[in-house]
Image (cartoon, rainbow, N blue to C red):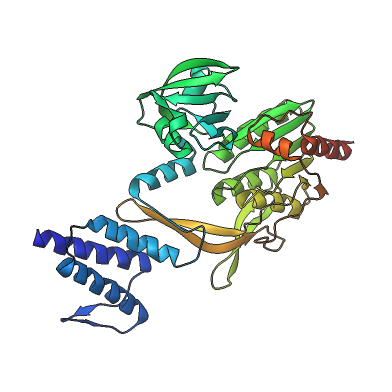
Length: 397
C-alpha cells in the first residue's frame, strides 16, 4: 500500500509539471530547494501532499486530489470560460466538437422553464433514431424508462436519455394532450447544425452552432439552394453561441473571394492572420440575422462578411465574445480549456465586450423570442426574417 501511494504521489506531481510546463530540475533532500516561482509553487503543493499522506486521519481518494488541484488552478485564473474535464466528459466534449453524439438525436429545453424534468423537443436531428421512430418538434417527454420526470430535475432527465450505443430507451411523450410511447435505440448520431429552406426563391440557412461537421453540411446545403436557383441567402445566426474556429473559417472560405478571413492576437500582443479564403466564392446577395445570443464564432462569421461588404446584418446587437479558448488533452484523456487570445474580422477591431451592432435593427417581442428558441416561430411572425428578405430583395433588384 505504501509503495502504491508513492507511485500515486509521483503521478500527481508529474501532472502538475505537465500542466504548468517544464521546469528546471527539482532537488529534494529533506526539503525543497528552489530557484524560481514555478518550483516554489510545485514544491508547496508537494509539501501539502506529503503532509496529507503522512498525517491525514481518514481515507482519501488520490484522483480527487489531482482533479481538485487542476480545478483550483483554472479557477484562480478568473476566466469564466476555463474548465477541467474528466476523461469521460472530455470524450463527450470531443465528440460534440466533431459533430457527433451517442443518443437518440434530439435537442431539447426544459418545458416551460419548470422546476421539474419535463423535456420539450426543439429539434430532431436528420437521420437520427428520434426521426426514425417519429418523434416530433414540440413533443413533451414526461417519462423515461419508468421514471416520472416530474420527480426529477432537468439535468437528471437529460442524463436518463443518454446511454450506451445500441441500448434502447423507453419514452412517454405528450403530444396534443395524448400520451404516446416510443422505444428508441441509442446510436452514434451526426448532429444537424445547418437547416435550410427555399422561401420563394430566397435561400434561408439557419446555423445552430459550429462544429467540425458544420462546414460540410453548410457547403452541401448551400450548393443545393444555389442549384435550385435562389436569388439570395439569409444566414440565421440567432441563438448561435459559437463553436470551433476551423469550421467557421472553412465556411467563410466557401463564401468569400481571396483574402484573409480572421486575425488573432495572443497574450504578448502579437497579431497574425488566422485564416485565408481562395478566389472561389458564392456570388449572391447575402444578409445575416443576429440577436443577443449570437456569440463568439458566429460573431466572427457576421463581422467578416461585413468586412468584405458581402452581407448586411439585421436584428439585434450580438453578445460580444471575441476571445478564443484552446483545449488541451492531458495524459489520462482528461482535458483543460482556457482563454488564449483575441480574435476579430480581418479588417475590423475586436468586438469582445462590445458586440456587433446590426446594420438594420429589428427587435422581436418576448413572446416571439420564446418561440424562436422553441423552433416554433412562423415566417409570418418572424419580423426579423421578413426584414432580412426585404433587404435582400432590394439588392437583387
